[in-house]
Image 1 (cartoon, helix red, strand yellow):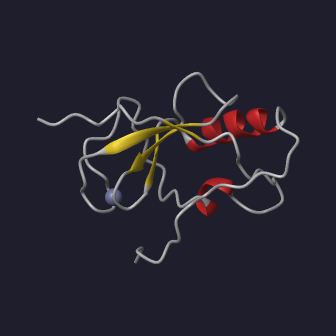
Image 2 (cartoon, rainbow, N blue to C red; image 1 turned 180 degrees about the vertical axis):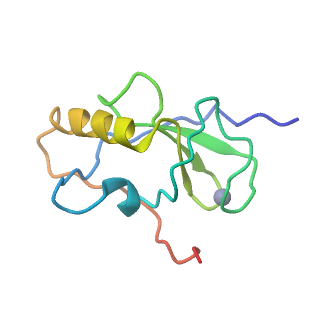
Length: 109
Ligand SMILES: [Zn+2]
């Protein structure tokens, strides 16, 4: 059985966190509430087996997401409320206007 690829950690220090902009996790392309505390074997969107850990600097000592290396679909490691709490905590550490380099969502649906 293949295991998630963990050699390519991405660190996203730059994150848009506007509490007034709607559900941040929805905006990032998170679909549903399923969490994967022990990693993801297959992308739920495309089935690809290689996923990278996605860490948000200042948010948590562990990656908050797993991102598919093919379609960039994000998977939650923790619950939505907890993930949001961590991200908002991290946001307070950074003062620059922040932006994620996220893929477009044209592949969904
Ligand atoms: Zn995928």
